[in-house]
Image (cartoon, rainbow, N blue to C red; front, top):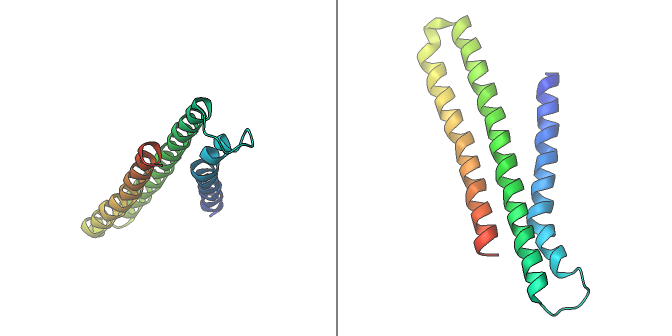
Length: 119
């Protein structure tokens, strides 16, 4: 139970980092000089901030997904070891859970690509 609380705390911290890096970092590059004129230097800073935000977002999402998948497989293996007759149901549920976890990681990849090319 203690491991689960630490994992949830870590995921909350990663979510806060995502939010800051995606939304605040590119805006800070434009507001650095205090003037509203966009120059080539501020455009380069914004591009770098977008790339950094996207890298942090996809890296943290992939790390969190890997942790989630590892825990899922470990608990499924324990369940199958305890009740071998329920192997089919446990395996099906595990695969479905892993699909949902991977979907979240793919969504993070799409958001990272949108941050780089659209924003």
